[in-house]
Image (cartoon, rainbow, N blue to C red):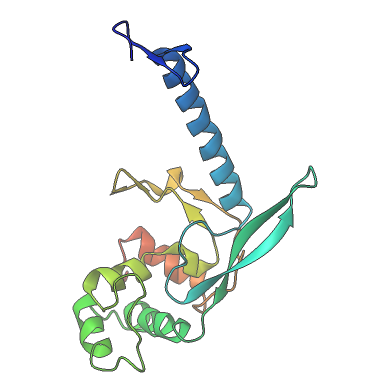
Length: 184
C-alpha cells in the first residue's frame, strides 16, 4: 500500500482503489446474474430446506461445458413432518407454539430440523413461510437479514421439483404472503 491510495500487487504493479472497486462491482454483478439464472432454471442453491435433500446432477451449458447443479428431491424421513406442519398450520390454524408441543416429545415421529437440531417457533415459521414447498426455487427473499418484498424475489417456474404439500401453491403462497400465519 502506498500513501497515494494505491495498492501494490505481487509483481510490484500499482493498482488504484477505484480500479479494484470497479472490478469488484463487475465481479459481483456477474455472480449475481449467474446465481439468478441458476435459480430461474430450477436448481437449488445452498442447503436444502427440511423435507428435501439435494441431489447433484451434471448439466451441459449451451457451450457444452459440464456443470454440477443440485435439484431438490423429497427426503421421505422428514417430508412427512413438513406435510404435517402444513396440515396443522394451514388447515387447522394451529399456533406455532403448539407445533413445538406436538413435535417435541416424539422425536422418532417428528425428527427435529437439520438446521437447529430442535423444534422451535422459528423452525416452524421457517417451514410455513418457505415457497420451495410450492415447487419453486426462490432467491433473495431477504436483503441484509430483512424480508424483501415478493416482487424483488428471483423465482423459477412452478413445479421445478416435487411438491411436499397438496395444493401447495395456494397454501404456501397464502401463508408466505401473511408471514406464515393462516388466513382464516
